[in-house]
Length: 281
Image (cartoon, rainbow, N blue to C red; front, side, top):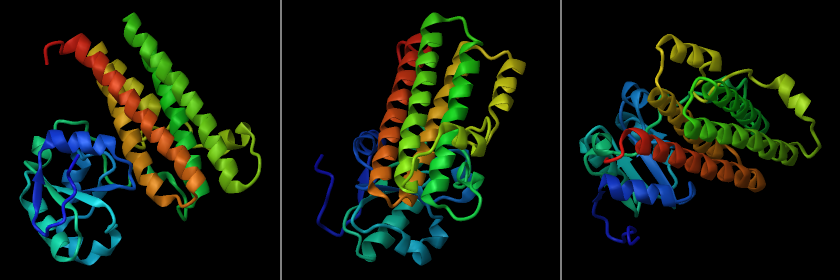
């Protein structure tokens, strides 16, 4: 896309161009850097963003990969411009400031603090633990779609949620394969079932709590589809974070495949939501 640069100047990138670029890149090619404060990040952030508040950046700059292009963002673009300048002065060669910050971002956003989902792990974040968490979350998403589809009468929406439910079941099979790779031995689904976090979603919330809230609020179809999209966004966000923690290349490929499919799920839900409720947008 001609975005890489060789000069030391700071370049800006518009929200639309950034969204397209991020969607088309692999996680090992680009870093999206959020330099806001924890409260801001928790409310909404770009899925998969590395979170380092600006006041901490100078001390934590070693955590960033110099081989990747960096898109820095904040609320409106001012703090991230300072962050980009710091990176450039420290020798980073491909740095962009998101023009207008997250206020200008018109893509999907994730919610929750940086540890959402990851906090479910006990002890060290080993590959086995990460894979177990992924299996639990896929099972939770499957359960959510099963219960959500029973709440709606629109046949097209019901069918899509059922397809997503089936996809989450397939994801569990891929994750079992990843576990076997890491453990170096066969493992039965019953073993994962016993050790799994029951009924948990990517945000750390219980499926039953989310479904109960939808019922109590007499949620309309639009509300259910929007919550479904948030499930997929948070899944995408968490899997990108988890991918950074896994060193086994074969397991990385499994998670990369899950990330690609979460993106497709998100696209299908967004398309359906747009067609039914925002046809002219």
